Image (cartoon, rainbow over all chains, first blue to last red):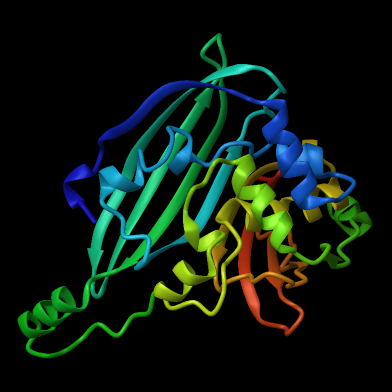
Length: 149
Length: 130
């Protein structure tokens, strides 16, 4: 993981709340309130800029990393078909024992600049084995003992 | 939210429909997440997992769906979810309100084996920290 990306804006773009994408989320949930849910979370900040726009820039290993948490601050639901602006940044990225932790913040605003949603995703990445060995040696052999489960 | 209104809340658990592989695929397509750990069992194995796992926002959606079913969409302002364990294809997730007091509103997500797969903190309209 690239700790030098702390504070950087990784994506700044506009996206449309595509009704077809909302329909896929509704199908996935299959519940009476699925559409209300889908319009609260139609975008995943780390991929809203396309492909590996975030994962690649923070150098997150998909083999060693997983999402550890997610938080949402909703100001309103999205509307099908509306165009919104989104800014994705690295709010926090740290070295913690055998792990790297990154918090990716995405903020969505409407055409008037009004905030629709703040979304944070926390990624947890196990360090490569050789890096863990180096860290353990630097700590006189006392490993931190955390798990990325 | 007053004590009287708190006592009127329906805090019974909500069990979501089983998460099928098709539902997992629809969700990752809907949010355009190309991470193969959600769709490719062989890749999941390279990550040390026994099978593909549910996407993060999908887990959040299961929690939010249960909260909206109980309290309505307008009542839910913030949701902070910690992913505690993987959700696999076929899993049935039950969402239970826990510690649902005036200052501390939590939810817990468990699979059909009773394992906690996620926990969440909710801020609702009218809460002191709204």
